[in-house]
Length: 301
Ligand SMILES: Nc1ncnc2c1ncn2[C@@H]1O[C@H](COP(=O)(O)OP(=O)(O)OP(=O)(O)O)[C@@H](O)[C@H]1O
Image (cartoon, rainbow, N blue to C red; front, side):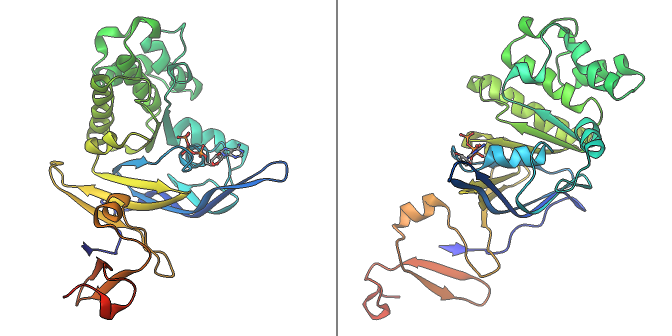
């Protein structure tokens, strides 16, 4: 196995999402849970990233912080120029209203049931005091290919159509960042693909930076970069080619040189306890130590 140990540079000029050493501790009656344990994540302007992790890995905790609703116990979190560790209530409102857009798993959290699709998209603009709301709402609904349904209420739309309207709502005030929490969690495979492609399309066409948080590994097929979250930390990353046919895997190396291997590599090669390292000119090889810990008893090289 050959490994590259430097994280990939983000494609944009600057990091729109910049989290470093994030810690979030929940304290209950005598119990302490470290939901984030020094998480670092940088997302460049215009990038689209999936963050994938098992239940309990810290995804919702991270989104709570990125959405401005929760604060980390320690570490740095800057999104679209806002320092999320020190937001005043006025800044929080400005941040949530204009700098980021949200798409949640549950439709009822995204759309008001008694408003039409167009009225739902107009609402955030109304709250922000924007003019020209109807024109912009219709443009966004067209971009998301739901222009035929502008006068329908959410209950008259399919799950996939509801989520596409929700993306239009999230983009109404022209945010720099789109955060999506399990946006396909309640959809079947075909509708999920449709919604993920819609996010990809607004990322490409409007340049909005997108972070999709999910437990569904299939989401990674729709994005350039997938970051794994494990035990409250980012671990390995997969970067796909622009045409999404080939992929390269990366892993984060921390300040003291620790790195985490993807679990499928570990299982496939039966890597356990001690592994053998070989330092080459420009890379490091990792071998299973089949003969035991003593180098002399190891496999022939
Ligand atoms: N309010 C809370 N109080 C105490 N512990 C919490 C709280 N919220 C989350 N946790 C714990 O923090 C850890 C991370 O939880 P989190 O909800 O962020 O994970 P997740 O990856 O979003 O999981 P899921 O996919 O199931 O939603 C878990 O061990 C969870 O039990």
